[in-house]
Amino acid sequence: MLRVRFITALAAAVAVLFHGLLAPASAEPTTPLTYPAGTTATRFTGLAFDTCTAPTIAQMTAWKASPYKAIGIYIGGVNRSCAQPQLTPSWVSSVTRMGYRLIPIYVGYQAPCTTRTTAVKMTVPSATYQGGLLARDAVKVARALNLLAGTAIYADMEHYNPNDATCKATVLRFLSAWTKEIHRLGYLSGVYAHQSSGAPHLAAAYNSSSYARPDALWIARWDGNSSLTGWPTVPNSFWAVGQRGKQYVGDHNETHGGVTLNIDSDRFDAPVASVWYTYTARTTIHSYSGPSTAYPVRSTIAANAGVRIVCQTFGPKIGTTTVWNKLIDGTYVTDYYIRTPSKPGYSAPIPGCSNAFQTTINNLTRRHGPGTAYAAYPSPLPIGSLAWVTCQRAGSRVGTTAVWDRLSDGSWVTDYYVATTSNTTYTAPIRRC
Image (cartoon, rainbow, N blue to C red; front, side, top):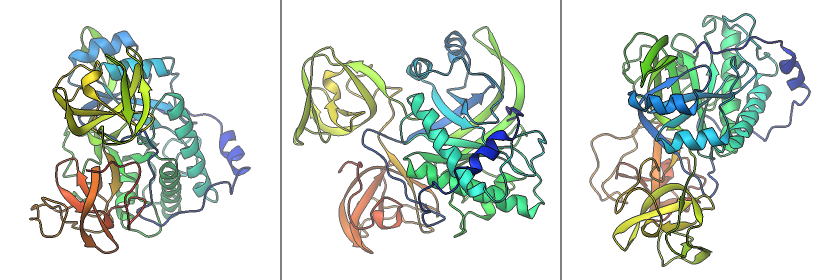
């Protein structure tokens, strides 16, 4: 990625002063994640690019002619190299309204044995604390940019000496603490790592009870091959379901729409940033606690008032559409009375509503309905996969729960083996099917 600022180690020293402030650790490798109301996880599949300084609105407009539909943005960290005058809530709103997805990158402390000798480094005795501290800072800056809970934030871990055992263990403790604290705050944990150091080390710890597993892995391997499988240091069964990114070409110039930028090229099928999209009501309407008029009314929205839409889902037909909009306060309005771009269908760039959680057993069976009597799909989910849950409903009992999760591909899995907040009942804020 090569987007790192080499500054003094003062920040690392200051961090030690606050040691011990983190919340108690959760069980590894799959740690719990709670989504607040009015949030969603957003999955992007396609080509992306990252560049040191976020481009201007004019440049991003010109690059709509490019094949890239997502951009990596350097939101913070002591080792971030470039100034970011464009990174404001207004920029985020404008760029996402164009249809771009955002990939937040946080360039925090680097490995004690990093190949970048002047980088600000984590310290061996304080790596656990430092990982959590920087996770909190990353969420703080993400919130300041209006990146909602459910956003995936990628910790940038540049290349380091893979043969230094102490350094390896230190990095894993740092990234484990990062993941646990990111999860505690309601965000998804991603890691950007080199194919020859961080990536194989995370893969070796994938099922370890000593380290929390990140939700997504983005590797640097500049071989010109954009494939998200066949990585030599990471088995295909790890981070297998909407959990992978690959930076396959390093720094180079590309020109689109008459604008030249120096970029890295990436392919993604992974969680990215979640934002809201503002549209207006065509008439006075109610919002409801769920996607149907059968749910209790929560508010009245005046004609021409703005509504902040997080995602879209399905519900009873109103007018010509079955689409319902989930708002930032966690309530729902029918799309029929909102000036979104499409009727009767879903409106890009608004994502479909889903909440992503890791699975806790290997070969979790996907079924055609909410119960073990339904036929199984031929491809079960490997352990640690993301279950992209769109809704929940009752079905046959498995373990301690009768709750089943409907996934974004239309299949069903028992909630007993998904790391939602309960293995006995429904999980807020997931809607009922």
